[in-house]
Length: 218
Image (cartoon, rainbow, N blue to C red; front, side):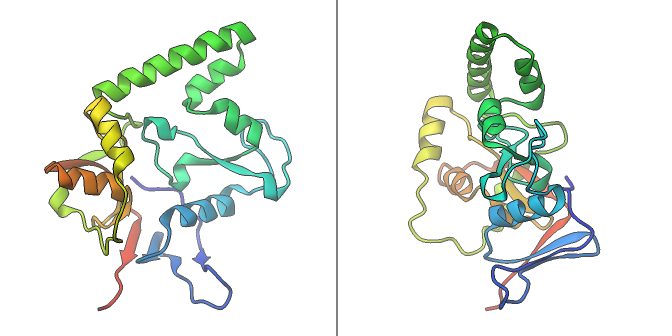
């Protein structure tokens, strides 16, 4: 899939450093080792602003703005620009782990109906977790051979306990990994390590066709 990107962009952690991510010919070129999630947050604010809630339209002081996952993380929603919306704390909290379709229905309900609706959403999501672990919008994900994933340098003592616990209950992976167009791992290291541990041959992945990681030399 192609994520939303601005026409031009340079990302620096501090003013004294060279850019560690930039837009080049409509492709986001990223230096290996940076926080991909932080980069996605910064890009989202650049494109969508950080002054108004996308849901209620309320003006928000920039120190109180939040980012909502449009397709909820509870269903495997990734942290990518296409899936993030600036929002106020109330809207983010109210939407919780609902999809946009569910949230729009929820907003028009009476308080008693909302309580029942939230219960139904919980049961619906539990069913999805037992059946497939997660679910994504059409065209976002696919299965790829795990041997084709380049994890880069893996930190020591990565804790995969939460992934193991989820698998123990649901017998499924809790979310897809995210890779660049060459198969370099951008997000989902814990899921990747667990899948490799239990010798899964194919892993669910979101391939970002307009993102490319530049590997460190040596």
